[in-house]
Amino acid sequence: MMAKYSKSVPCRLYAILAREAPVGVVFRRGPSKWVQTIGWDTSTDKFTPGQWFHGRIYERRCDLSPNGTLLAYFAMDLSSSNPHSDRTYAWTAVSRAPYLTELAVWPKGNCWGGGGLFESNCKFWLNHDSGMTDPNPNYTPQGLTVTHDGGGAGEDWPIYSARLERDGWRQAQQMKVEYTRTNAGLITHVPGIHYKQNPRGKQMLTMTRTLSGFRSDEDIDVSYDEGKHWHLKGAAWADWDQRGRLVFARDGRLFALHAEDIGLKEPQELIDMNNHKPAPTEVPEWAKSW
Image 1: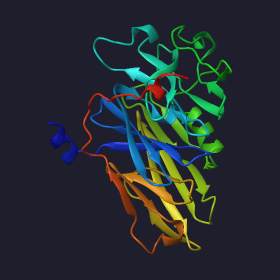
Image 2: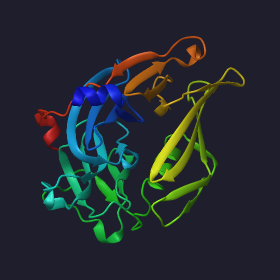
Image 3: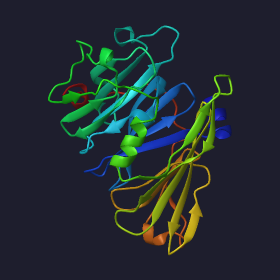
């Protein structure tokens, strides 16, 4: 059954890259009720399986500490009998990347807001409203200062836009949407546009974001060599990695291309994750404690 799925519908990939280390975490989604985390050493392109989670992880409300050692994620349990009743059906957690074993947990109880951002390796901003900022007493942060502004607003936005801006993306056009209050959901009248220059070159990524119904779509374009453009058709995610390479995900596979080779060479496929199947994962001891 899983093999049939992987052949007909590619899994969906999204990645977050650390700001001060050659580290990334890839979120692999598929089938729809399963998510796998995978560690990525961007200096060697070695991948380390993390853990499988039966439910939904909202990857655009997740973050990596600057040194890449801690992962913050917002999760919702989708099982009929919730094994995580001590944290409600939705919660924010901090773990040792790329694993999901919780070191700190903040129960949320709904999917409005949630997640958080690392302001430094030792300071974490929690995207919860003022009534939901107490950690689960069995999973409390240690050596991590936690702040919040009591807002906890939005879904992926505005926490996602805050992470984009922090990581070098700039807004060129603000998105304007209409909520129809029907099953049609959201309609985008003006798409949102963000761009990010390669920190090691002149190449530019442009991301055009729209909302349709309850789905978010991002269309990505690369500009290079004084006005030339390359449309990354079908790309689910793209960024400049710590080496200045163009890295992107498409059809369940990760690709990389040195910036100077854009327009001259084909991207290198780093890994195909379509055949990964949900399975128990042994978590190393170092990932189970602060």
